[in-house]
Amino acid sequence: MSTPDLTAQDLGAAPRHRGRGRSRETAAAAGRPGPLAAGVVVLWLSLIVLLPLSAVVAKSLDGGVGAFWDAVSSRQAVDALKFTLLVSFAVALVNAVAGTLIAWVLVRDSFPGKRIVNALIDLPFALPTIVAGIVLLALYGHDSPVGIDIAFTRSAVALALLFVTLPFVVRSVQPVLIELDRDMEEAAASLGAGGWTTFRRIVLPNLGPAIISGCALAFARAVGEFGSIVLISGNIPFQTQVASVFVFKQIESDAPITAAAVSVVLLVLSLGVLLAIRGVGSWGGRHEL
Amino acid sequence: MSSERVTRIGLRTVALGYLFALLFVPVGIVLYKTFEPGLGNVWASITTPAAIHAFWLTIMVTAIAVPLNTALGILAALVLVRGRIRGKPLLDALIDLPFAVSPIVVGLSLVLVYGANGWFGGALANAGIQVIFSWPGIVLATIFVTLPFVVREVAPVLREVGDEQEQAAATLGASRRQTFVRITLPAIRWGIAYGVVLSTARAIGEFGAVSVVSGRISGQTETLTLLVQKRFENFDLAGAYAASALLAMIAMTTLLALTVIKPRKEHQ
Image 1 (tube, helix red, strand yellow):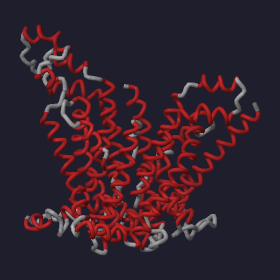
Image 2 (cartoon, rainbow over the protein chains, first blue to last red):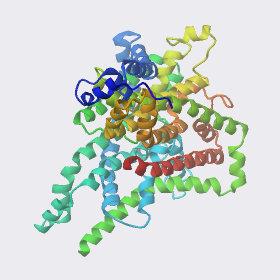
Image 3 (cartoon, rainbow over the protein chains, first blue to last red):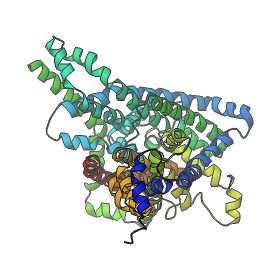
Image 4 (spheres, rainbow over the protein chains, first blue to last red):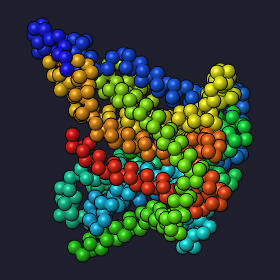
């Protein structure tokens, strides 16, 4: 490999590089990306993500604000949006309890096969959503081997959402629980606090932010979920139809303005939630598949 | 003491019961039902011409989307961590945008830009390029949904390692390329690997966005996940299970890869 021309001046200038006045060439050679790199990244993001999303916003306003309002306030759209919000909220709440419990058991308990269970928690992220729908129908559908058939019901939609959002709270709480100092709990116990009191007064306040950010991620994911729901919900308008499936049907029946208008509502919802937890500063942007 | 033990076993039972009912048993049943009739049937089912085409289409789309997002993702991570540009918090937030967008909205957005009545629809038709209801649309949808993964894995590693080694290399006269290849890249390689595995799994498994833009033409624009849906809707349950089992095994391989990479990534 050829050695770049190394002059005495460069060497002499070296100590100063530690300070603020780092020379441009050294900064560049040190892997500091210049304006060109930033430009390429912004262009890529714009072409792939921002341009298409602005097309959705533009299309939703194609017929004016009145048409937008008509589209999102039709009975079917309102019902789909209401159900989506309600079920996503319920799913986030169940996750808060179940996710925290699972994280607790994975950190504080020990049993044979724990490592396998721990690895499989992420399966809902790795499994294609359509396959999630299929596996749930295999156990809870019309040919249920255990006699529980909830296909085409609202519970089925909730079940599918619980499946795909399972890892969020577990994976945000787990690291906090591992780091948590046991001293406080032992102190509480030695002062006579029972297990539940110690958990409620000592552990839970420490886990709070992680639980909330996991729930928010689960909620944002549930609001937009499509693949796992499309088969199991039966897509019954006013009953089991969620917003994303409603949008899909509008695209298929060539009603792009309605599709775009409801999409904008979905976009604002999940974006609002994600920006809110970003503001809280506990963004756990890892692992989402 | 014994009451504590009872609590512990009780909590364990509830947690594992929840996981079994929601996750392990459903996945296990599909795997069991797939392989119960014998391996021959499974093999026949995943080697039909439509299935083979779907498999290769999925691989091709992944092979285009993942390397592009990896290269751009590394660059974006460098810009986010080390760049001196204005509006970095905004750029940081925008990169996460694909996580917040419903797959259906992703599909719709691409149709509105590249479809027959879309912004570029006329120009593309004149040039004889079909994006929507063709493979380029599937590729664009896949790039969209997998865009944040590599950035989100590489950026924290870059932040962690700092840039003192790069400065030293540069001070000693290494060129930009040398510094990148010999210092930066080895430092972030497990972060990249983690991001690539996550992107690949998502690319192979993407369904919603792809189902809007693909047109689902069997033997042409049908990916593996779309094949699962078509078979299920056509009452070919065994066929749907076989394709699902294939995808589930890819997913489990992904988890295995992540389990292997993670300690290395964190050890660096």
